[in-house]
Amino acid sequence: MTRSVGDESQVRLTPPENAAIIAALLKAEAQEKQQIRRVTWVQTLVTVVASGAAWGFGAAPQFAIAVLSGGGVSVLNGALLAWRMSRANQRTAHDAHLQLRLLYFYAIERFLVVVASLGLSMALLKLPLAVLGGFVLGQAVLITARLFLRIKTEDSE
Image 1 (spheres, helix red, strand yellow):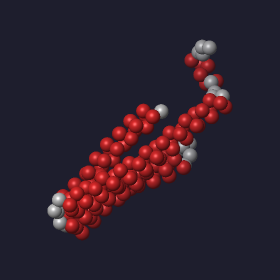
Image 2 (spheres, helix red, strand yellow):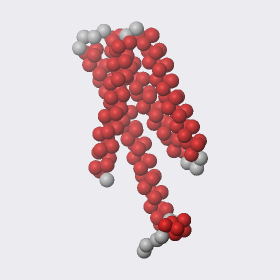
Image 3 (tube, one colour):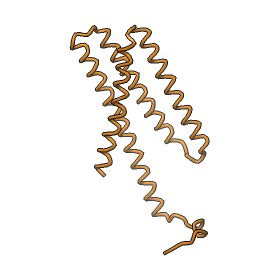
Image 4 (cartoon, helix red, strand yellow):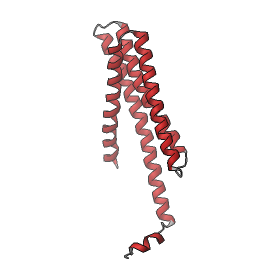
């Protein structure tokens, strides 16, 4: 059946098509939440292993704690991202301006939490490069784990 351009305003989804779209959206949301949890756990695991490896190879315990602290800030960033994503999904998406304001607010919030946490860790532990190294490692794991887990999720469908 062909439709003219002017006829598009009359096109409506039938209830079965609506149900199919809703089910697909709910499945995608559930997969995203599961992926975020996995990524956060992988970040935590790699951070603890890197800190243990630093200590195991003869570094001072304070150095290992600094690496753990920097990685912990990265894990905190990922957890805050996951929490805010789940909170954003609970709100209705009818107001695009509200969604955009929340997006900016959440980004600024995460930025300030990361800057304050890194600054505090560097000031207390007095090993800024170790803290930054742990943070960079955690962020690298965040990026690579999301890529690899996404590929795995897409392949399993």
